[in-house]
Length: 79
Figure (tube, rainbow, N blue to C red):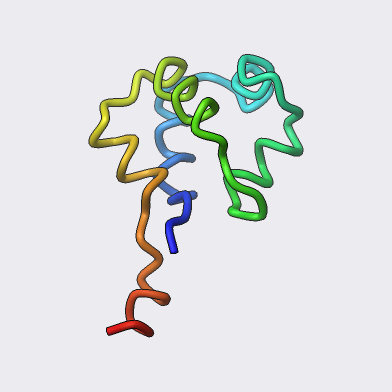
């Protein structure tokens, strides 16, 4: 199961100096919707990930670390 790595996303946002309000407005979603996505309650759309790459100036490697994170608990169940 691929999940958003919440801690890495928080770290990148903190380092960017941008607010969640600003980022969510740029994405065209509410702050509540952004938090739900960040906490894996709902999923980020591909277009939102693409926009976050631009807003937060993410490399493809950093994007993959954040948004295509393999849940280690799930991984251990399938081994």
